[in-house]
Length: 479
Ligand code: ADP
Ligand code: MG
Image 1 (cartoon, protein in one colour):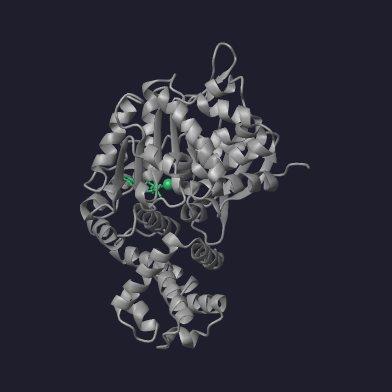
Image 2 (cartoon, protein in one colour):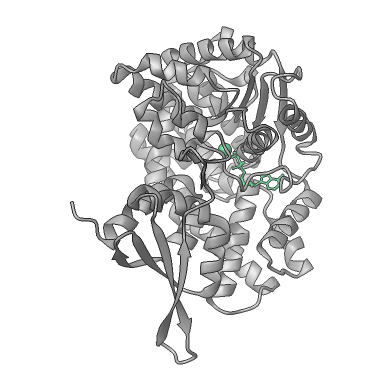
């Protein structure tokens, strides 16, 4: 098929979307238009100078990777910036040219060399073809460092253990190092920071970051393609193995067996293993005991939601990094209002900056309140209590009235509890407000419902699958 600017950019977007937060993707990539493809040069149009600078500062890495993947090693990306001429509706293009190659420099033997162990992989005699394309992205993201990982009570142990491990991989007693914490609390950032520090310390140390999801896919692909030997050999050469989100191994017996084997081999050979999980090992259901017991050999450290002061520090650090000024009262307001997780905090900050730049207004308290309101409103209007009640009702074949009614029939009680649980997960409603929407029940009933659903999910696979299916239905709506 002949490549055009549209097809090339579309392929790039597919890759970018898989690796960038949804909010950031919408803000920074959706508005871009591909306008020209000239041999190996793709020109994209961006809405403003700020946009161009922001992309260059935050996403140059990923842009480079995907454009090279599409157009080869000598690929170039050029920006065309729409300059507002003051005359409404009219715009002119100012050309900015950015040549992508390359941080990787040619070494004397002609091999391309990068700082993250890719070279070692290129020379790997057991190179697995199917792994090759994943390499680019399973590598470390240099934006994640200890420097920009703000310390607080919420992460002190995990952070300092991470530093110790990064200084002496495989030598401390923190092996494996297991980091756990809820979504958006900085697990990936921390484990990547460790990886980056290890490779800075020793180029010879082959660090590999991989999500357990990707590990699983690679493993199943290897089986399918009769490549298992190469897959194993590849992993056995790693010096510092970072596996993100191990809860994903749950219920995947064959993958766990493979990981168990790799784990043992690396551990016995003094290699470092770092893992993250969204819950503590004792709550990792569906994982074999022998694997769980291995996880407990080293150190397990948790991450909590940062307190108010730490959230302030995180916002200020981000502003500083972006060269943006936000008045103190706005910083305080954001730190105070967004208390769910750091990712969400960053999302709000990005929206705020984007609003201010696109509308050419200054960032003040009023704009912050407006932005936050829009975001919360978006979430609520997309899946609201009504929609959840309807979806759950249909799923359990129960009317919405029954969900709100006082009936104590078992099936109805279960459906009601599930609906309450999902409202808690997906809407911004308080417990009190959820109770109100279910026939005026009080908040303790909602707490009880949420707890019961969690308890049953822990022990009943079929029930857990039902919830997963419902969540899938709701997520389709969110997208
Ligand atoms: P998780 O993997 O736990 O879901 P991430 O590591 O992806 O979370 O973190 C979400 C976002 O929050 C990232 O952009 C990360 O850089 C940022 N973040 C989390 N904790 C901190 C922290 N202590 N200091 C600075 N940034 C943080
Ligand atoms: Mg993560």
